[in-house]
Length: 397
Image (cartoon, rainbow, N blue to C red; front, side):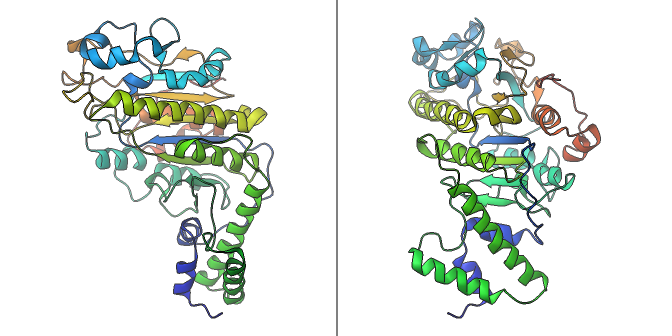
């Protein structure tokens, strides 16, 4: 078979093409049993934190959301008399009880707009306009390989955009060349590409050669780590794939998992009931897959902004400001609400309509990075420029 460089991209899957596009790739390091990992679960579409972690002890919640609060009803899982979990997150209760799960209320990016795209871009850039994402800059400050930074999803998120290599793996765990084709044809394509780029030391050729080797290595590693659980839905598939990548001990330090479906302008209670049940099952499966390795992993959920405190006329909520975050892991100082609660009375709301921010998203991410990967203050300043990190005490010393 004769292959051109254009044919290389036509035959490569999203993960391999993204690897290729990141520039010169580093060689694989030997697996490191001591690697610690941060997993950032992006809830794109503005997750309603007041539904995910309802402040049921605040009487204003029922007044502002009569139908939504009624829908929560007896399905609410109480945590401390003030806050609870949506019933879909009940599988996480054991982690709360064991001190591995913490809640951060009223979290958001100070100064962000209520536009999904603008707020997501600003959050992923680190709070200031930039050509690179905060996660890519984080990798630049560390000794890294092709597998240090991984995105689980359909494309490379803005947070990982930049000069440093990042790998994209589909939520199902698929990666590599022509993975949808029949095995014999696929083997022929791989052999042809390997032959095409076997010689030469120009940047394009050497990068292609490394990309092929990288994809094959990831495939082999995932094949050796079959799922111990049966993931349900796209969130479950993505988080179980992330756990399998960590279990493979490839040196993954930063994994970004993309999820959608959080924009709930209408029929919110029904839509979020499905979403939160998928999320609760997915995070529980993620922890089960990791087993003892959860001690070296921190998972944090984050969204571009929250939703209005008051429900709208179509049984939903609109674009707001602050949301809530879950933080799970062995190093988390859990069974706590970490951060101030501003309250839901009108005089406490941002612009009279939204949950006010009391914890900046950059401080949340900064605490997780510092407590898991030992990222120091000067590095945090580079990741989140024009922002002085305010420690939350989220992680164990």
